[in-house]
Amino acid sequence: MGFQQGLSGLNAAARNLDVIGNNVANTNTVGAKTARAEFADIYANSLSGATGNAVGIGVTVSAVAQQFTQGDISTTNNPLDIAINGPGFFEISDNGVKAYTRNGQFKLDPNGFITTTSGSRVQGFMADTAGNITPINTDLYLRVNGVEPKGTTETGIQLNLDARSVVPTNAFALSDPTSYSGVTSMTVYSPQGQQHTMAMYFRKSADNAWDVNATLDGVEFTGNPVSTLAFDTSGKLTSPTAAVALSVPVPATEGGPLSVNVDLTKLTQFGSGFAVTDMSQNGYGAGDLAGFSVGADGTILARYSNGRTMTQGQITLVDFRNPQGLAPLGGNAWVETAASGAPLTPQAPGTGNLGSTQAGAVEQSNVDLTGELVNMITAQRVYQANAQTIRAQDQLLQTIVNLR
Image 1 (cartoon, rainbow, N blue to C red):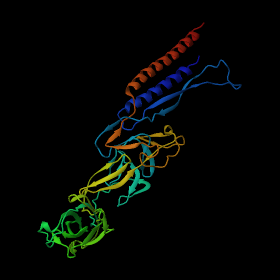
Image 2: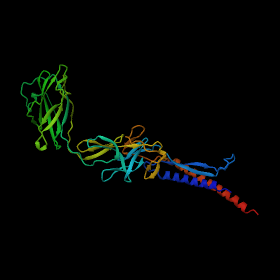
Image 3: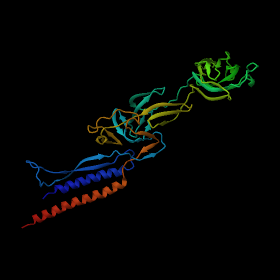
Image 4: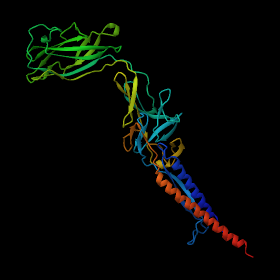
């Protein structure tokens, strides 16, 4: 009598129920991937080879295969919750031991490092203090300290001067609006980050020629006019052709005077009203970290209270030739094996066939709960059927034992 077939069927059905139960248990586990039990039949061959009437001796679980299909993405509004939409894994490090996960529920530790719930550090590219990304994969962290102020060194103005303006007959005076044809102002910063208002007054001096006078906080520059402008008959600027260097009289106690290059090369003189279309300057005051955001390419942008934004780093993704060969480590993580192969070079999300990242969201488990419940019923019936084969074998054996 052979009980092995039924026994192997019971073991396989129980293993299948274990897999299904694990899937059901992880229905709400972020980044979890469903698995399925894969079976293989068993045959015993004689020394002379297989025969045409060989009877199988049961079944075995040949593999428990994970299914790395995309899970649903749900929003959380937590900026450090990051979902992967497409292929790829986050690379994490626990004291140098690398693992891979789809669970993007990240946090900041007391030192500013971005970590998983278990404390493993998320890997990516860091940026220098100027916001330039260095493509070397390392532990990602946020600089939680504020930014130091920067004194203004470059400014730019884009505006139109009214060609219909007449040359004033009176001398230039701040208090006399008839002595100039237009004025514009901008904020400039001292090296200490203190704000000052620099204004520029445009006064027509002749046909197609203008003087530029400047003030700082309402006080005239000693070298006024600080520049002269010349236009051709079509209203295009012919002089100056490069930025004008100004010595801005910021107080010495604030690190002044400032050497500022003022770009006036985008000025025009057309027969329309005085109009400013663009102004820019590169200085800013001190600022504290106000928040951060993560882009679809994994770039981490820090926002500061002074209105500045700065790139702090970039989360990277990796992928494998055979993701199903990864070994589950627990804690929503996998490690590489010989079957999976080594991870491909870490790259920015959206590069090649890698998916993109979505901040303020997480990827839910890809478990189909309805399907798993149906599979559970099927596995239960298979278990009962294999138990019946053992019962039938037992009844046959009992009949033989009772022969007299």
